[in-house]
Length: 266
Image (tube, rainbow, N blue to C red; front, side):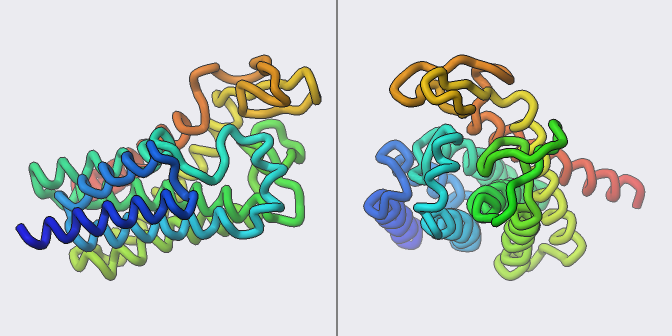
C-alpha cells in the first residue's frame, strides 16, 4: 500500500515537472498521470521505468536544435508541448494493455504493452531526429523529395532513428522484464519499426493536409497565417494523433500475429 502511494506521488511529480518544463500542457499533464497510474497498476516499477524512458527521451529530443525545427512545425499540426490527445494517442494503448494485464496477467499483454511503446518511440525518434537531416526527405508515395516534417516522407537519418527508437525500448524491456527472451525482443523491435512505417504510409495517404491561401504553403494545421486553411488531401478527421494511434495498434497487431502464429506452428 505504501509502495503504491509512493509510486502515485512519483508519477504526479514527474507529470508536474514535465508541465513545468513545457514538455506537457495542462491537459497533457493530467493525461500523463492517468497513463502512468494505469501502467503502475499493471507493471509497477519496471513498467513505469519503460514508460518514463519513452517520455523522457522524446522530450529531450524535442529540445535538440529546437530553432531548426521551427520551420517543420509550421507544417505539422502541433509543436513539442504535448496535450492530452497527443499523450493518449501515444500512450493510451500501453495504458489499456497494462490494465488488461492487471485484470488478467498474460505474457501477451506484456508484449503488447512493450510494442506499443516501441512503436511510439520509433515514430517520435524518427520525427525529432529525421527533421534535422541535412538532405530533404523522400516521399514514399509521391516518389519525390518533400519538405522536412512532411507526413509520408522519410530520410536515411530518420529511418536509422526509427530503428534505434524501437530497439531502445525492446532492449530496455529485456533488462526490466526477465521473461522477455532475445527472440521476443527482436520481434518486438521489428513490430515497433513496422508501426513507424505504417505511420509514414498513413500520414502520406489518408492524413489530412491543407493549403494556406495566404502563403500558399502546405500544412497539417486547420489555421495558418491567421486564416482557415483548405483541405487538399486526406480525410478531415484523420490528423496526426489519429495516425499515431492507428500505427501503434498496427504494431501491436503485427506482434500478435507473429507470436501466435509461431506458437501454433510449434
